[in-house]
Image (cartoon, rainbow, N blue to C red):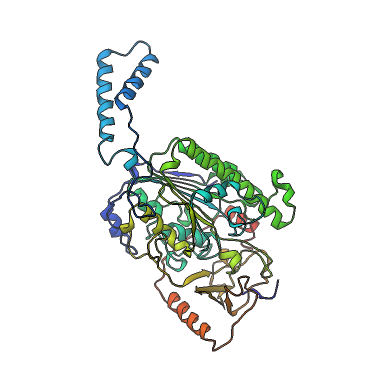
Length: 513
C-alpha cells in the first residue's frame, strides 16, 4: 500500500409497456438471486409507522376538474365539440378518474419515487454539512439538513466501475464481476432498476462517466438510459453538470410516477477544471477540485428545486452519495489508487418526508444502499441473499467491511475493517494474463506496494502508523476474515470490447496507456 510515512453513445429507450416481462421467465433466467413476486407496500417511516410520502390527503374536486378540462378543450376547437361527444368524453374521463380514487390507487397510496444522485470522486470530508470550511456544497447541505446524514459510509472499491455496480446490484465487486475495464456486470444479476421496473416504476438514468454505459451493463432495467453528454467532448476537458441536470429536469415533465431516476455527475473527477464563480478558492489541484464540487452542487440544486416546484419532493426518496473519494498526497499519491480512508470514505444522505432529519452513526457500505431503498419502499422481500443491510432497521447488522480493487493493474488490493482495526493486503497480479486494455495506467503509481498493513482508525484516523508485525493477534484475526470473504462465490462477468475512440478517452483520463 502507500508508504504510511510518505507523503455520447446515445439514448437507449424502452417503452413502459415493453418493460413488463414475464416474471417467471425472469426467475428462470436468474440463477444468482431469487427474485420474488412484486408486492409493493407503502413506505415505512423511521418510527415504524406505515404511510405514503404525500402527507395528509387533500380532497380534490375531480369531477369539476374534468368538466373544466373538457370545456377548455372545447373552447380551443372549431367547430365546437358535438354535445353528444362532449357528454361521452366527460363520462369516460370521469370513470377513469374515479378508478384512480379507489383505495390503493390514489397518488398518496402510490409507492414513492426514488432519486439517486451521485457526484463522482467526491470525498466525504469536502462537503459543508460535515464541517468543511469552504462553501463547496450549500445546496447539498440543504438536502442534508432535511435528511439523514450517515457520518461513516464506505465505497466497496475506491473507483467508479465496481463501486457503482455495487450500488445498483447490492453485490460486492467479486460477486457482480465489473472489476476491470474488460469486464461488465454479471448479466444474470437483477439491479435496482430492473427490480423497480418489474414493479411498475418508470426507470430512467442520466450518466456522464465513460464507464457507466450500456457496455458495462448499467443500462439494464432502465426504460430510458441517456449517456449523450459523452458526445460533448473529452470527459476530462468538459464540464457536464449543467447538461446532466438539463436532461434530468427535462424528463421530470415526461416520466410517470412512481419513478426511479439515477443522475450521475462526472464533475469533479480529474481533470479539475476551474470555474470562475469560485476562483477565490485558489488554483492548486485541490482548490480546483473544490471549485468542481461547488459547480456540480449548483446544478444538483437546480434539479432538486425543479423536483420541488412540481410537487414531487413530498413523495420522493432522495439519496445523495459518491462512488469514491480522491487523494491529494496524504499517502504520497494522487487520484484514487489506494484503499486509504480519503479514497474509500464517501458521503451519504438519505432524505424522505417519512424520515426525521438527523445524523446516523450506523456504518454504511455501498452494499447496503439497495436493501435500504427496497425496505423504504416496503419491498424487503423483493430479492433474497443480498449481503447488505437495511440502514434503518431497528438492529442493523454489524460486521466487517470489505473493500477490493484491482486497479492499478499490477496489484490485488484487499482490505477489511472490523471495529477500529483496518488491514490492507496487497499482492502481485499477473498483468500479462490481462487483455491489453486493462494492463497499464498512463502515469506511474508510486504509493502502492505489496505487503500487509495494519492501522488503528480510532487512534490513527489518518493511517500514518503501520502497526503490522507477524504474529500480531489482530493481523491473524483480520486475515481470517479476509480469507473467508475472498473464498466466497464469484461472478460470471460479461466481456467488454472497447472501440478505439473509447480507448483514447480512457487514455486521456489517465486510466490506461
